[in-house]
Image (cartoon, rainbow, N blue to C red; front, side, top):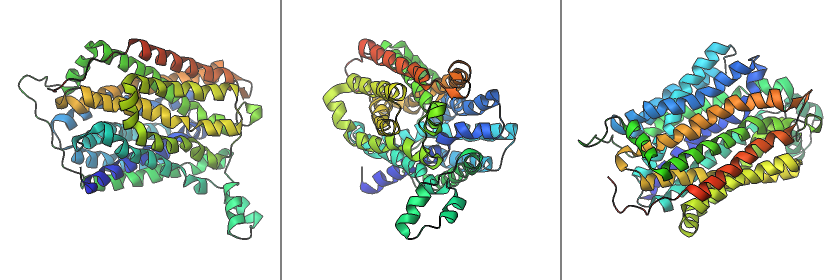
Length: 433
């Protein structure tokens, strides 16, 4: 792969995950501020996982067999970008829900399609994918840190009247918005995401041409059905089920961490300023960047199973700190483990799928795992997590975060044991159909 193509694929990943990273961390607290009840919030949050499931049957099928992948990316990001841009100006439930659903239906399939564009232009996926996919990590980080200066109480800064650049910076970073002002300013996350999506729509047309794959005479015409048939193989089924559990655990993190970081000690949380929530949560992406660089060497040394088990156990370590040692310093430091969780499990799953599954249905095979990673697992978490938080682990005004985080801790531990005991892929085939 030449340097120009590698850079384009890298930048594609930067923009792809910048969009998602803009709005996801803060939406869980933003929706209640609009007056949406628990059911309405769960419906909105379900748009993303539902889109992942629907995308497996429709959008990914079309990208596999009917459209050049780069053109599919361009169309999806243009229309989806306009939809999420409009969310910044929407406060009524039904318009908000339909716009979010439209954005997600178009955006979610582009994650697997972006992977397919990257894989189609690689010679050695184990060596090259990590270096390109790290662009997504950088994109997520870039989406988080500017909001340290956007979600600021500027009235407090002006009143303090700091002298000198250093004092001004210290005052700004220490004057994060809280309460309703923080929620009102969160609309900027949708504006920035929308602009980035439209930029990626234009950039997609400069990506390497990735033509649709024609259906051979002996192949299933429905690519998603052919991909689903892969679950007949025990090692694929085990990996798929473990991915389901790990996805549930990941979205427990997204559902609860923002509230956990903002809540003060009286509310059972950590007490971090509002403008620092996204940067703190993005620390894991810094570690993810480093982990991606060593992923190829790790896979060659440890193999598929051990690498993925380590990734899952990272969740166990993180939630153990959340539950048993919730100090600001330790909670901030443990965010570094997120990079290990993602790179050593989810990125490894993508590489494994590319290595083992038929080329003719590669996008749909990626979609099979995206349907559980971004779909079913997230759907379960987005309905179960609000119920657990509100009905089981909230007592008065305080949340029992200790008990709450034991749920994903136990789930991650079970998933790691299941993968270690029952995942036995056959030797890599010499040829692929």
